[in-house]
Length: 368
Image (cartoon, rainbow, N blue to C red):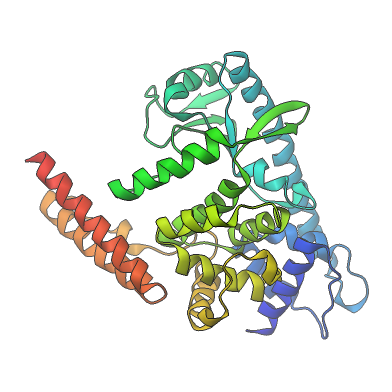
């Protein structure tokens, strides 16, 4: 690791666990904060940096930028809280009990919830209540929707000025029918049967079960690694969730869910990085495996290069317009994705490629 990377992780660990920041030598603040922005963790690092005195204290201009970032994040939280409370109360008054995904549900697990960066609200309402919930939320003051079409796949987008809300009929998109059936079983238990009730701003809100919080936070990070790039913000979410629920998890159930979705190797590889770089204790990382260091080093390089949703994808941007060329382009894209993933996770890459090809042929046959 470079000096700036070493300093970045020292600051991030201090922010996550509330431990003192100790670093020999002068902090390379410009390089460190550039990394933090790339990984969407600049607010976390700023909270530590503002407490530093002496030679390692950032410059006045850098401190001003940090204070501004923290102020903007706090304003976002306050506005999103207001929208969430109003939306949840409206739904509950109409016999719909939404489940809060990600966002505030994860922020509650941080030592200081206002330091987690996010900019939208995710509410899961399920299939049966989806249309009714969307119609109700569209009556809220100041809301804007992209179209009149309510049923828009996984979720429906509603915006309140600059603050988006995603109303979920399902919590995740999956291509393969077999995996979808397995995931639906996991989702049913985590979001219906064993969901938790928490107090939020004086309102009783539902959040997923503890096992589903851990599983879904990782699964969401994995999905973004497959598609657009994952940053340390999302990986920190997994680490913080594991830390908060240590000793409270049904690890047998968690293992069953992870293995049934063919994700044990990715889970252990991300886990190695959480222990090695984020400072999560080994005991708090279920199914920790030290032997995956080589694979973890490759994953580390990818995360540092790609950052939070910032994977460059010129292939998708250059998609042709002709139908025949479009099909060929999509077919080639499957193999491009395969080789990108196979460098770190060969078995998962093969599984993803087979699923994509199978779905492509099924769509072709359905059209015929």
